[in-house]
Image (cartoon, rainbow, N blue to C red; front, side, top):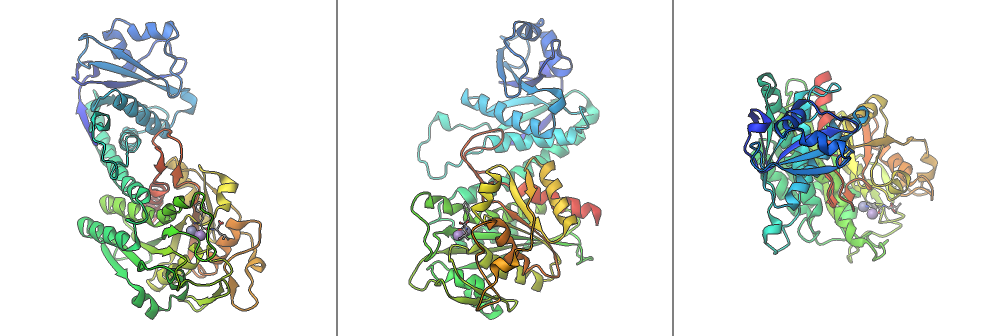
Length: 502
Ligand code: BES
Ligand code: MN
Ligand code: ZN
């Protein structure tokens, strides 16, 4: 999908479809919508007067122009009430408008820069949201479907039309940023949507290497033997039940090489299939556990975008990739493993494997000199019970970092909510090791984070439990069924906001 900016007047641009907009309650539209209305002899005002179009959020009204203006059709997209309008509205409405047009076989369209200038939204923010909304709303995962007919045609071009020449530069910058964002998020979605027999730890490592060489990042991949030498007994304990070799993937972006302190670690859980191990999951829904690598895939998507943006900060992406399988060599409940940092963990439930992998990944991040880190993990079913499928759970040991992460999410339309990292240490106390890998029945997301906190000593750390938010069953706005690509844009925004304050 290509998003371009065109200097021109909306009624004079030849396009199969022009997307304009309408706020709820407006009876005589102004701006670009007003210009179209005038050129069509008040056709739009009449539709409003007759109650056929009301500007309600998500409402789509298609008008054919029969040669009276250059656009062949005009699609009026309802923006809802002006008081609740924000950049996220632009993202969602653009996505829905593009899908509406695609269903009608339209493969190229134009749009106005919705809201640019309203309520503090800059032309750049508007264009970025348009590019993100269009690309992500039209996203499809078709790699394994052989059907190849007209219904499969996707929209490949969207032009933003602007009359005011002074806004063009900003619009172009926004369109570029939005396209980068969409590229990274789509990479993450593709990886998460891929089947677990294909998206193995080895495949994740290959994609990381490929990306690094194309985007100019450094990338190293550690194998089982390397990890043994580093003493990663906790990570390797999870990997030992599988015939697929584990990979520890590190991607390095250096945006501020003179200041090593200006760093951020992005640590991703990359369980390419979570069967539960010997503490086997039930069959119902087990296929969903292909997405247990979404944290790792999100880190890779974010690194891809940062490589384009080049912010002034050093970002280290580390992905602990392995399967969690119940093979003959699998670890047993009752086993005790030793992490890279020396702390020991008693395994009570082999299905609580994410924390075991992350424990060593966190030790390794510190070993590499990372002093500020965010981990992203589909860690607990409990967070889905607490916050559902639309809100990411956040915890951490450093409130300024947590606050910055929460506000990055808010800014990008990827909501997250902080849960208390209450001291439930007694619940993970073990009689035979330094800790056990599961807490009691309650507060499953918090006790999981308590284990991670044991490995975050001495660094600023925030944890995102994305078990609910990486996947969706419904199509809404720029989300389509399947992998969402959350929280890639939040991670990118956090990196940029840290870079700005450095
Ligand atoms: N990967 C799962 C968590 C999960 C659940 C992700 C639902 C996505 C959707 C994790 O490894 C897991 O199995 N957690 C257990 C922990 C328990 C055994 C302490 C859980 O949440 O049930
Ligand atoms: Mn598990
Ligand atoms: Zn898991």
